[in-house]
Length: 116
Image (cartoon, rainbow, N blue to C red; front, side):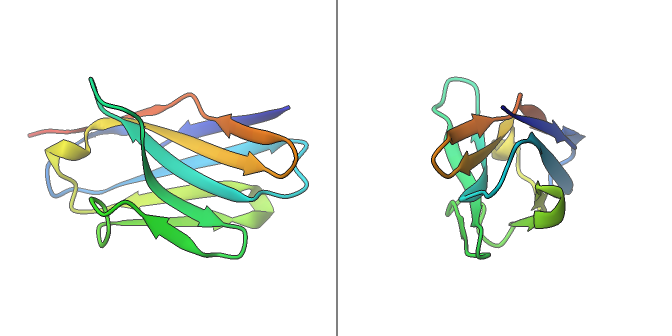
């Protein structure tokens, strides 16, 4: 079984920054990719950013240039650095990992609120 523990959410003013972290534990031999999704009230969950085992990344258009996803393979940890935050970035952010031949796992979610 794989567990994901997220941290780093909170309240920030528009234009501010936050860094989310997600540490994966359990029996993990390899990871296809690690990703961050978000879900705002009344909206569907959407992909924010994803990083593959080889380092390739992709981002939602809405966060390109403002967010950076990175990972520490030794720690099975993924980070999301968010800068120039906007009120529309307010959402619950979920960590997701995909393990080959096993499937996907989700974190418990971290609330990010951007408000003055």
